[in-house]
Amino acid sequence: MVDQLDPELLTLDVHMPGVDGIAVLRELKSRRSRTRAVMLSSLTADGAQVTTDALLEGAFDFIHKPSGNDVARNRETLLAALTEKVEAFRASPSSRSRRRGAAAPPARAVDSTTGRAHDESDASVANPVGFRCEALVIATSTGGPVALRELVPGLPGDLPVPVFIVQHMPAQYTHSLAERLNQASPMEVVEGVDGMAAEAGFAYIAPGGRQMKVERRAGKYRLRITDDPPEHGCRPAADYLFRSVAEAYQGQVLAVVMTGMGRDGVAGCRDIRQRGGYVIAQHADECTVYGMPKAVIEEKLAHSVVPLERLAASVTLRVRRSRD
Image (cartoon, rainbow, N blue to C red; front, side):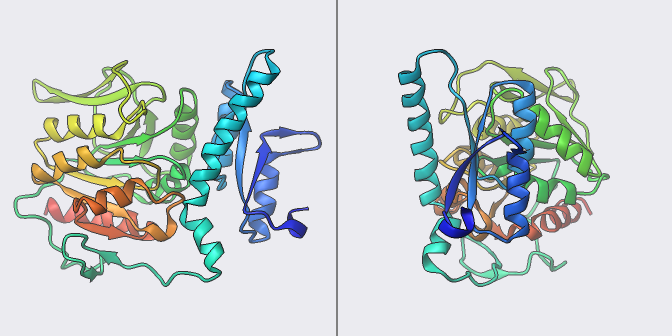
């Protein structure tokens, strides 16, 4: 049916009679299909794990199946959620590129403050004066699992700074994401726990449904997991994390803003940049939804705009050169 209709977007249940959603996604990928999928998932540990795997396989996004016996209300809830995902997809680069029918030219790194393209792999690339990276922060939302799977495993296990990550996801899903990334990465990737020490060579993913921040006390850096209110409707929120890291590490922070809807990360990047840190935004071409990076670029907060496939190398180079 997909071959005949060639839809831009379809819905898949993670569990279907005779086949599961993961198998369908892999088949679509093997056929180089342009069709994307929204997964329907239950709010269970098993559902979270399978849905996380689906997102890592390239699913556009997911929707929780409504629970309860009120069929009319469940239908209304599901329709509202699906409408939101469809609207997000219609605004995504992948949908627009299909309507154009032509591939975009290869992306190059661009300084958003000057508009000049440059090569982020060039060893002559300079950091801001006085910048010595002490922490790396990453923010992402829709399309984030695939982007993180490209970035995090590409970072070396001996990266001399801790990595803090916000991925907009509910509880349980972030735990599964941390497990999957840890299996593929040279560094240790864990879900953040309150009171956990922040150490170089570790990546900490903010737990779904909670806020994560970093505090410095007596020269030690520790995670704090709180029930503080959502920001931009998100918990965890990038701005919440970024502000705390900017303060704890006195601005010596490298921020990366990747694919996702909305403006979460803008205020945090402004704080980091004003304190002397460095900001990288993901290039539009490989963003599932070009919202968060676009907002950072439009506010002229990004020092550079880098394609996804070069982010890991760019980040590693910039961290190491800042500490030479």
